[in-house]
Image (cartoon, rainbow, N blue to C red):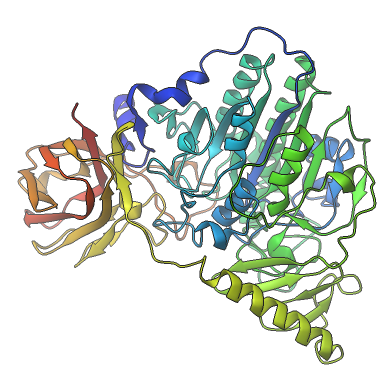
Length: 600
């Protein structure tokens, strides 16, 4: 069974570089000699679906977050820091310093989450400046190489590349593009890797992204944290926007307390390693809360361009340079993190494209900076909202005074008609300026990169035809089921980056009654196919760890590889088509995806 877990989700795991590639090799050994006048280390801690209100520091008595509270007290705090309403766009803005629509990211799955290849990332800038770089946790800006984090400036990667993962307890993950078995609860596990990285590079400047994947669904958390909340009565509840699912709230807050514990482990490691003074620690979340729960009375949650959907904590701690407890009220956003961190570390920003963000270092130093006319734009699913220092124009054209009315209860657009008109023009101009850059023509999925010997086409990226269905509505981590007819098929649009010979594996399940079903893969006018001669019918897993039943996201299965044979393919665009020319039985097969392995 353990072997199956190692191979089961390989089709979802991000592409594997031949011989691990140069970037992976660079992270194996730390520089053993201290660097004189070394630049600061940088640790960015990014949580997933944690709302501004999910902190006891912000007044929420429903939970306790002592580690994050301590970090906040010791940091420069940004009172009005704005991210995107959902995961992948925020990550793109952090990585590039540019609004996500400019970067090609306009969704969260099926290729819409991929960061354009001509965008330069913060990790590339820091690596070029001599830093060791690593990402632990959730990536979510592209899977197939060269969208993979190992191609975007990170020497080391441990985690998963998809938008969400179907099980958080010892799941199949990857380390430097090689499939591995996770060890225990995923947040504890990726933090373990982060601590090892700090130990390995204590004598060399490093840039580390700890992208904690919770409290994003599935709502899973170790017993220790769940037991604190399962019967608790909360005094602070959601506002009047929608009903609060109290069981979901309990699970989310328990997950936040777990991630808080792990943040504390990182902070303790810095102190134990005598790196406290020389390390910049950044903490923020990627969007508003993923349910209706207490969030400081703000309007909106995840997916909304209102204040509650896009306001995030931002703490930046550098004890040797900035005093504890400084509060900055100037509006700022995820787009500002790249220029700010590069400025703090004296790292050259080498992007050939103009940044939307600005360095916040002068504000942190208390210098006079004129940013009073600044506007921060928020976008999701065609909805645009903008925020000035005092006002928010929402996606429907209503205007709110965020100083006098932080809960957005009183539309003042009629009373401030001229200001509303001017801000509406500004929003329209921003939308138009980004319209050309935000062309949403999906590029094919790259496979066969010469530096990687393994390329995956997961079900997430395919298109179902006929009676074929996804295992759940959300494509991330889903698989294809309900193969009933000979005409049923799935397609992937691909680009072969380099021609050559490949072996192709189909990751599948097949009940005993469907043994004998024939599968056929077609690509570039060539065919590979065979009959399934052995059953493999494991149950879906993940439900046993759920604290709240999931609604739109799939459970996971340990798919088995079936070798379809060898094929020679030319470089260029093509369609990969998977069909079942002969269907046996009524249950049908299930498909997790295809894997192409280059034959040297």
